[in-house]
Amino acid sequence: MIIRNFKKNPILFVGIFLLSLLFFIAIFAPWISPFSPYAISLEKELCLPNNIHLLGCDANGIDILSSIFYGTRISLFIGVTTTLISLFIAFFLGSIAGYYGGKIDIVLMRILDIIFAFPGILLAIAIASLLKPSVQNLIFCLSITGWAGYTRLIRGEVRNIMTREYIESSHALGIGTWRIIIVHIWPNILSTVLVTASFGIAGCILAEASLSFLGIGVPPGTPSWGALLSFGKDVIVEAPHVATFPGIAILLTVLSFNFLGEGLRQWFDPKE
Image 1 (cartoon, one colour):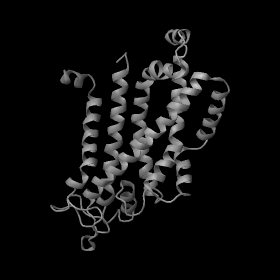
Image 2 (cartoon, rainbow, N blue to C red):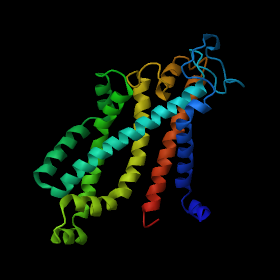
Image 3 (cartoon, helix red, strand yellow):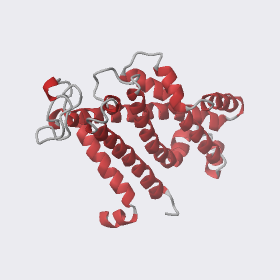
Image 4 (cartoon, helix red, strand yellow):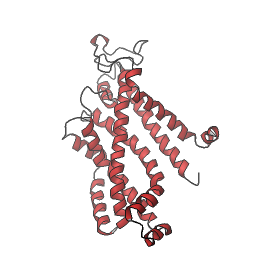
């Protein structure tokens, strides 16, 4: 059964396998990392990959493999948490606007138009530059820009489902508003939201890496793929491995979530 499903939708299984590996690394990073990502050893400055430091060391002599393992924790935590917060806001606002329509819908759509008038990453950079670098502030910045897209999606899906006969029947039976939304509407839009959220997590991870690369993301000294890229750009000629391996980690993580999203899209699509 599993083999047959794999042949029909290999992208989904590849995405699940890669993400399972990434979450395993994130959870067990303290136990599988060969060194501490905070242990500075200047005599090993920019050492090349060898049998002790498999991916080499950075400018402070910190083991890059250990930094990447711990950076997996940061990236996945920020990506997943930001997406969950954005979805929580979007489900509430999008459902209300889609269900009631009228002035509530008009006001929310105008607010979304204002947010969409600014590129998301530029708005996140502007907000992050005003705040102290921290994981909490980074999640706050990304959530402010992330909820808008999900809200517009959910509002449109709710508006579409409101025309179905079973919703009209629920109204005729006197079923309460939130029971209709939770029991009859949300389950029917969940597949679309899950697919979009899979791609959204990948976008959050890229945004986190970008902000950390600019020095306005995670605090200095925190193991982060974006921070490693920032350090690596200054020594790209003499020590290209410092930036190469974190870049590969970002690439594989983003591909994993994209594979998951595309696989889920095929899984939920009746035509597929």
